[in-house]
Length: 273
Ligand SMILES: COc1ccc(C(=O)Nc2ccccc2)cc1NC(=O)CCSCc1cnc2[nH]ccc2c1
View (cartoon, rainbow, N blue to C red):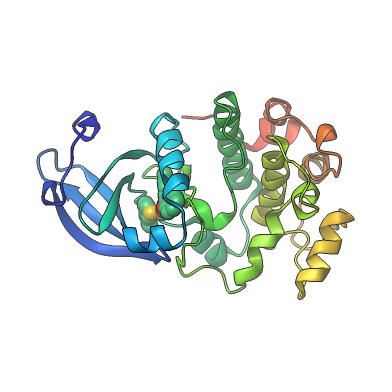
């Protein structure tokens, strides 16, 4: 990886492989850095598109933030370069692909797998909050799986990725906490809410406030209309943890470090490798 820390890159430093996905701003390719043979994901963004959407500043800010984040559960942004028409992001490649595909395949995860994922995401979020970075947008579409099966918050930037997203494009509303749906200011506790939503979806296969109409999801979020279906069977410890995270008053949500001490996590999560 040290080779990837060099400052100036050009496209010719890489062999380009298969397409991994495509987004509004461009495509992502598997690539190999020629000197180190290091495999990466090369995200190609079109300057024209970035200018049109006035997101250059957002991209610059994000590249700045990401270049300081080093955590086993956060996808690395090694660097970037540009040419006449495009900006290239040199990203970590997650060999086991997209988590939401895995969730669709298994329908829902075991309590051990769910708790292991939730604990690793809690540690990544504690790390981010320590660096005053919040709202890492942790819905399943933004999570990738590393070589050892570990989760990586991939934070698709503008999360406009059409990484053949889930059937409901509007799924994005599911993860917003009341204060964001009511668009009042938000703080790090939004991530605790989103992690609670994710934990529920890992165990039941659907997010807790899902509804046919946007307006119904909206109402269910505001009212925290939290119900646990009889199937699949889920331990009361898991339900207790979720109930302590999906709390309307953001100051009353279980803090992330307390989550790591919760009985369900302690009894079910694999120790972090
Ligand atoms: C740290 O990460 C990122 C940082 C920044 C941006 C971004 O685009 N920012 C932006 C763009 C325009 C305007 C403003 C901001 C995106 C990512 N991350 C991804 O895009 C993840 C999927 S690409 C990688 C990757 C790896 N490993 C895989 N394995 C299977 C598929 C796959 C796909």
